Amino acid sequence: MVARTPPDAPGARDEVDRIVLAWERERPDLDVRPLTVLSRVSRLARHLDLARRSAFARHDLETWEFDVLSALRRAGAPYRLSPGALLTQTLVTSGTMTNRIDRLAEHGLVERQPAPDDRRGVLVQLTPAGLDRVDAAFADLLDVERGLLGDLDEADRDRLADLLREVTAPFDAS
Image (cartoon, rainbow, N blue to C red; front, side):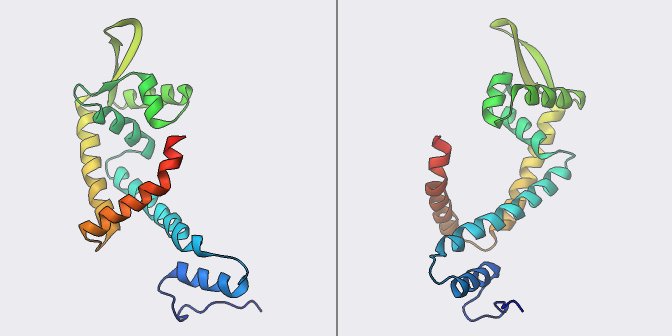
């Protein structure tokens, strides 16, 4: 029979605490403290992914569609970028980006336009329908994300953002 840490184990306030307590009991020779942070980050990432997918689905968007549309929206009026700039912002291959632009154009959310300074170049621009869709999805996403942060006050949110920035900065630099 496998020993389990009971759900009401002393000191356990959530599932991660129960997991950590069990590992501390089973492997007292190891420092399991990283689990107290990173297991929670992992669990939050799963909840965030589900919440984002749900928010985007309410606007008939897939996550990848929102990524491309939001990159264009963040570019500012007239909401257009080169395919190369979209590649940089969305971290996909050129073949994948071509496919994505094609599909978004088929849905009337973007259009290709000739680049004014390069006769062979193309720019991808949001259509009015694409602008409306990404704006509505973004507003919905922010509501969902506020809900995920629960009762954290502004100071705690700022502190959490600062701490997470310290952890993620080395990955963003590479």
